[in-house]
Length: 217
Ligand SMILES: Nc1ncnc2c1ncn2[C@@H]1O[C@H](COP(=O)(O)OP(=O)(O)OP(=O)(O)O)[C@@H](O)[C@H]1O
Ligand SMILES: [Mg+2]
Image (cartoon, rainbow, N blue to C red; front, side):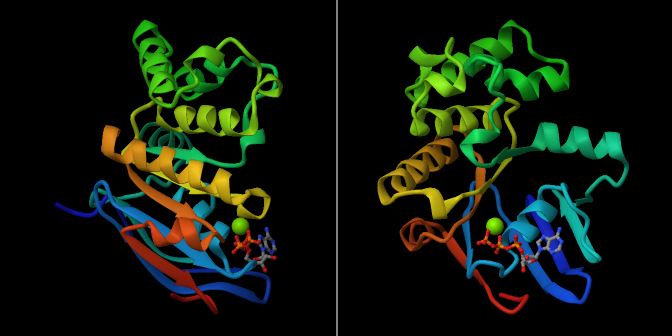
């Protein structure tokens, strides 16, 4: 079976700043990979490329053996259906309730039906936030907001969750909590997880740890 994600010889520069200088990356089913590296080493740049949010200057990307879609709508569909993205908690939509936030990727896919709503409730129960679903993000704790963001990343049953952890803003306890939530997703929903993190503790728990330095591993 081909890897879920296979990226080969990825390069990316901003002007004369060469950020990624030929990075290879692969991700197996249910694997948990941590990407570490100093601030500015290109972790978010790589994650955005793996997420199809940004294009590399050169190199190839495939998902389950097929090249990433190039065109706008096919790429959107691929991202929406196969990838779950977890960014900082404030990327929740402030005017939507927690449940509406979780269902947003399903709404984009046109599948925000009763089945998706049931799935949202099940995921929220597993993540222990089911009792907060009618509340807006500003009425939730930081940890609850993170759980909602993770539920949102899982709603379309992706094969991969890509999480760019804002570890500068995370205390140790929050970081532990995040790890547990992602690990739960992995064991309960067979999701492969890629976490970008500064936190050594979080990275040490991964199956594989990749350290980015000078544009390479
Ligand atoms: N759009 C952009 N235009 C120009 N330079 C950029 C852009 N995005 C990122 N950079 C630069 O590319 C380098 C890598 O940035 P990136 O955000 O990937 O780092 P990072 O490893 O995620 O850092 P951090 O740990 O601080 O989040 C940095 O020097 C950054 O200033
Ligand atoms: Mg970053």
